[in-house]
Image (cartoon, rainbow, N blue to C red; front, side, top):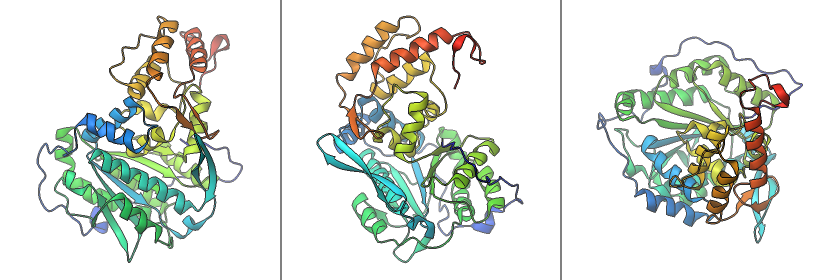
Amino acid sequence: MPHYPSTSTTTSIAEGVPISVAAFAVDARPVAAPSPREEPTTCPLDKAAAALKQQDSMWSSGLSATVAKSVAAHPLRVCILDNSGSMRAADGKRLVDTGPSSYKTVGCTRWQELCEDAVSLAKMSEALGCRTDFVLLNPVPSLNACSVCRSSWSGGLAPLGPSVDSASLERTLGRVSPNGSTPLTEAVMKVVSMVQPLAPSLRQSGQAIAVLICTDGLPNDQHGFVQAMRLLQTLPVWCVVRLVTDDDNVVSYWNDLDTALEAPLEVLDDLRGEAGEVCARNPWLTYAPPLHLARLFGLPEKLFDELDEQALLPSQIRQFLQMLLGSDLDLPEPELDIPTFLEAVRVALKDEAPALDPRSGKMRPWVDLRSLERSLNRSVRCNGKGASGEGGCTVM
């Protein structure tokens, strides 16, 4: 989660008046009561995981399987794409392949940066055979909303827009010229009106809708937006915010909002910025593009959200690496035998292709074993020292 230092005045989170869902009713209302336990018609897990790896060899075996399994918990993703005028700003960033096993970060507009993520998520949906809806914050004549793999899960929802594939989505978004303001309150209330009728069946089946808000700014109605987000989070949803800006005021607003809400709000930076935050807390991990996309996709496992929040404990490292490298791995408890644990990880890494380190633009192993050993030894030494960091231990 971004926590940039700022010398400028931060935007405070203000209370707003209660908002009526009816005030922002959408045209695409549920047309029928959903089946109590409707399962998404996704492809088998092994084929879905293989399809992700076929798209990009950087996907690790465990991570591709973890994302494939997440579809059962999140049968639908709703991505709100901010196409306001400020998205024309040319301070965006994207990765470009510059040769064998080498990439470089180049400049682009914020909208181009966001479109690249949206298309990547659409390709993931195609590989996994799961539904993802894309909604423009400011509708344009060529596009209001569309769905990728819409037939995989209906949930009783009428179509929000035409069914498209990733290629047509890329072409359509490429023709969009960002313009207008940032009506995020209205957009969130539309999602609320969509999800509310589905809430009982979603809760019964243990499912949730993943809601991804991609924006570079502040809501037009900051007072009402807080109430809208609180109402949204009373529903079975998993909320992720993708910030397409480094503006201190904007970052501070979303960080403050995360604190003000009762339920956690995962706020993600761009790939390189997020990699820097993860490295500061868990330097042994290569924060490669597939891991960033997996978090944007909406993983129900909260351990992925803690990567940029704190140094993982040895038991958490073991759990995370099993999800990253393969759940069938029999990794020993690192606190009991660090050398044996490191050897098991080393063997598992032999079967995985190198991953891109977005900070250097170079391909590296998913795990730096020397750095992992230092982190484990430090954690074991600090075990029992308490949160004050006694004995030279640093608590993050």
